[in-house]
Length: 466
Ligand SMILES: [Zn+2]
Image (tube, rainbow, N blue to C red; front, side):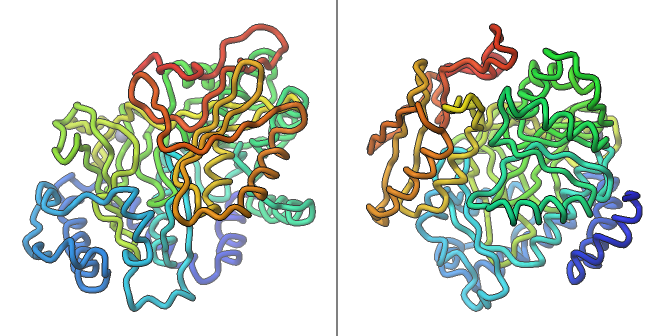
């Protein structure tokens, strides 16, 4: 279907209620990105005060913590330091008390995430959040030369428990929006050629995917001299993009790669423009700080990413330590946007696991799985050289023995016959030498062309370019 037809007819029909405010917000963001940093700052300070006032008045959890903070006294980003940091553990333990108390739950969506460290986190959002967050994503995609309605291939993790019928329905729905999802959890040497042909036939303007899956596809394309897939741009997300991965993906797709950083909890945090000088923070949507402990790090110095989401007014994420490490840049981008730049230093690194069927299973499979199990506080999946797997789990008091059988079955189905899985219930998850908590580690090299190639990520070791 013609992109403009999708954009102006199909999307407004599919989204009905939310499309008009979404389009309005998107247009606002297209304008506000060109404001000066000072103007962007002033607008979001007003929203921050509003959010803090709401949290203080209506969130039982925040009320106690913010009782000494007068919202009107917040005059700059440095004043944020007077607010306590919200840790993942706080959200895990107090999500029902963080939620504003008079919210009608029937109009909210409850979500969960496995997050960087594999600890499931539960939270809520409403339509207004969805609209603002989607508008931020639309703008980020537009920086990469893509608009809703353009032909689009996503190499992504598919949802669980989907039967053939609902999957076919999804494919039909997506096709009406000019979108094709390649099920990343099923890619392997046998299925890659078929999916790459299909993606090529789709003639996408954009290919978007988890970094590790784009690398997998890129490696296959280069190994086979495949010429068919020629998007205008590639968006890499969900995982840290290393320089050697960017080079590999750009060589295979012959298109520029745009890195994007976001999270399930707060949506699009930052994205690259065509100058590739760093990631522009979605400043109207989130405030990003970098901290070491409680102290702010200087520009250019790496620290824990702490995010305040200005768009979620029902579940205030105020100074939320999200589990990634980055640096904030001081210098502006030559593109002229007033949105500040950041650089990712470490991030989520997932390994691909090898299944008994000879396909690859992205590490992202596991946070999706465990987020549905309240009894799991953290986990680590480790595939050894002989392909057997050890899964270490830290349990919470909500642990129920019957859930064990459910996830054991799902893990067995995902990994297939011939892979022995050992479960260890532990008090602590071992970290890498660099102190990183990695929740999937594989020591099995990914071998696409059935000859020796480099593993996608060093198994259990450090990343070379950090
Ligand atoms: Zn720029």
